[in-house]
Amino acid sequence: MKKIEAIIRPHKLDEIHNNLLESGFTGLTVTEVRGYGRQKGHKEIYRGSEYNIEFVPKLKLELICQSEQLEQAISIIVNSAKTGEVGDGKIFVSSLEEVIRIRTEESGVSAI
Image (tube, rainbow, N blue to C red):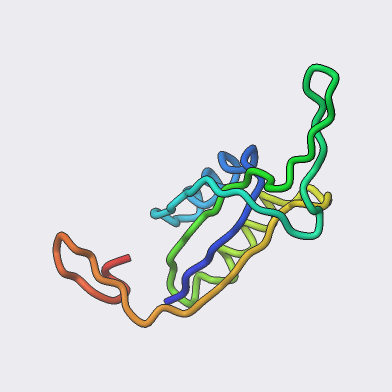
């Protein structure tokens, strides 16, 4: 089993979510986060004054899938989130040792 964490632009959430649902991925966790990478924030002008926004608002998606589904999930996220501009985000993949559904105490793939 794999855990995918993707940092994306907020306006890309609906497209990614819909494409994942259409492909059979049923669970997704979304968290509002702020941070920066190579873009080092950005500048905004409000009422004539310029402000440096160091921590850019993003969304963090967390998705658990079977190892066989990993490439498909990554492909969906990349193709849906990519704009070609700095700040499109990152994807992190890690292995999971165990998953347990609390309600039924199922474990492993059946708990996904």
